[in-house]
Length: 199
Image 1 (tube, rainbow, N blue to C red):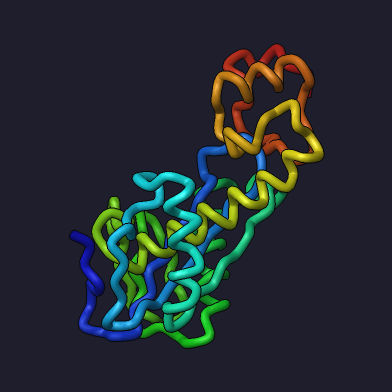
Image 2: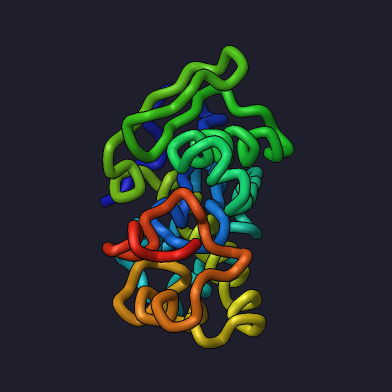
């Protein structure tokens, strides 16, 4: 059973990201502040939900949240600052897009940098424990998936519509066969035998 709040503050935002482990595309982060009476039976860590359930949850979260923000960190920026910093930067940007400033921040994972002077807590597997982090995980995942489906049309041979840029066998075989695209992260180990790959 997910809890609503970690702190005693009503204006607590949960934040999470999607796409850290992908070989292509952006990292997308979201932040959500939920009202005290928020409830939805489907809400859970986005990784535990089907695509259909995530799509059902997204408009509900956007309608009933007190505030939400979504931020994209491009694959170029991921390469420039590394994926951990891209995740934290994305979460900061998502929080900065909230129409209400939160009084407390809860973060999925165990790494975060201070944001302004707002107190915060990192929570491992927080997206399976707290509603606002779970809601942020759903928004981050659905916005990122939508983007990957869009760029799939440019490069259908990688099947991003299905694998969303994750290192599936099919995705890696496509890199072997067709090389890389402008959307691939060049600092990532795209193939196990990358030392022999001409990038």
